[in-house]
Image (cartoon, rainbow, N blue to C red; front, side, top):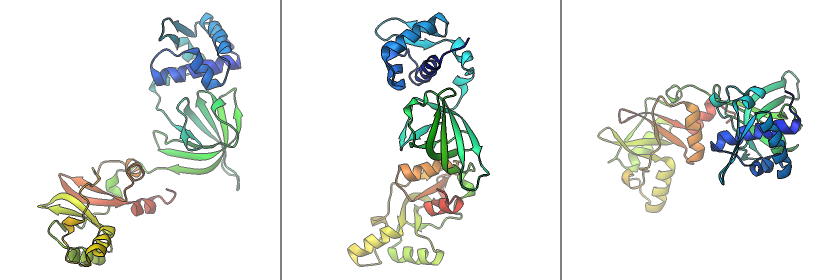
Length: 292
């Protein structure tokens, strides 16, 4: 069967919303996403029902659901097994669509790099000039940033000029952490901490008690304490941070990168068997991957 452009738009949007909400979708919700008149959507739904591509669900919480024939018609037979690849528009996530493919249309041009971003969902949420970010993708953690310069409503694709491509490292954090880690004892003073920082050329160290992690002391903590008390014989316990962000050595680096931003932290402690075995700072991440 040959569906019209509006019918494809409606069907793709229905499938996308249905997988987001796991319930029947009202025609008004589809019309809102597509920026179409609700009456137009309802009329087209009757045609799609006649083609056995959608089912109607009666009742107050009713609406429409896609049939298996709808997935086959749109070549989406493996949709339920696919990973969600997010897309942002001008810094805001667009949850009504999912990215299916990234086709790099120009790579060897000395000044331009273009790509076609094929969506599962409608391109109508996007306008020329929108700044978008795609990803990360599930396998290679690929992030693509660019500006929309065109739209293909037949294939539901965005045409973008790429400004940045980032592939986040997939290795575990144990391959990037600083180890062995230099620690301070809970009973030490600032004098000991300053000596350690100068000797090892570091800006922070985990604090332990009987080999167990109890906190972290940074150069900023030392500066703050000395400014308040004008002494280097202050117990580090008084100014250390006890709310330490810890991770296992088997955690992937890209997961830790997200924590730096979400929790507004500068370093994480790698803990194994209750003891600190390494430390990773934002500076370490930048050395590994300067584009971040």
